[in-house]
Image (tube, rainbow, N blue to C red; front, side, top):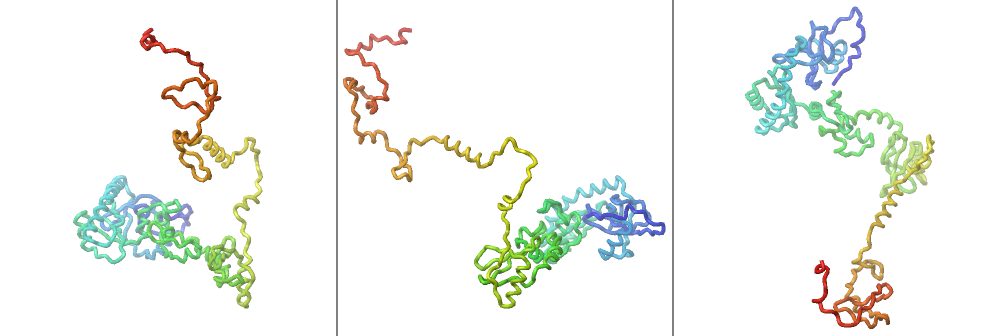
Length: 428
């Protein structure tokens, strides 16, 4: 919301006549107005000044003065002789303190004004509230789809807030400019920083730029189409003049090809056949040649599309001049994945509860050991251990006598009675 005064530092001629009208901005540039400055010529841009209000007084900043104000008056269609309100003086510390005190009431008034409008069932939305520096007047900015009769609302506001009430209807774009925010580009909204003229934006601007008609992506925070769709529209319109206008459909021996998009950066036109999703890039000269042949009743054998270089081929054909030698070496990501996969496979333990089936398709649960031993034939015991009596309640002898540790034979004869045996605990 700032206008650069490119004449501010230039020396003025002696015959220059001072232009008395000055542009003053309020609320960080969201509102601007013209005032008559007849006796304070020492004011500079950005200085806080006291101006006449309606009623009372208000405080704003000098945004523009001098010859450039004439251009602003012409832009907004304001006659210089119709400017009546005057600049009173430069603002003091007391004036600024009073202005800050009045501005602190704005959030409270906004909440209360919305509640009152809701109780009256009015189809309107109170966007922002601006209070005059002296606290004698409040301006309510609202948005509405249709005409709203707010005469009772003004009486309710005046009785509740004890000040003069002014209602101003604004559009959705002006509302976003007053509220501010961050756009999808990551910068502040254009309408809240520098854009003052809101031109009409339609979907034709997106079509000329070959953008997908996605309402969610093309809409701004105001719910309307983004203003930035118009920024590059003139450039696209100039570039599209080199493309043939009557080449939406061309005929070849294989069928009718339909135009899908135009690439103004490569000067290519992309076509596709019905029932196929593949697109063929053609040069402008080739399209004009096919159109000329179609007018003569000739259908070419093929489209003769341009061979587009893929990303993989572009990387392979790119010659990289190494400015250094890598002595350490390079570890690729695939080698790391391969080593980690091996580490995971070696860390897995075989499952004892399952065993592979005979067909090798699905693992089957292993049968209990006791059940398997019923069907297995018993192995013959070695001759050296045939005389040893089996232990009561013991397990069956091992089928493989070589792996079993050999024990010394027990002494023959009766065992001594248990009462005569001496335990280690008794000996201690």
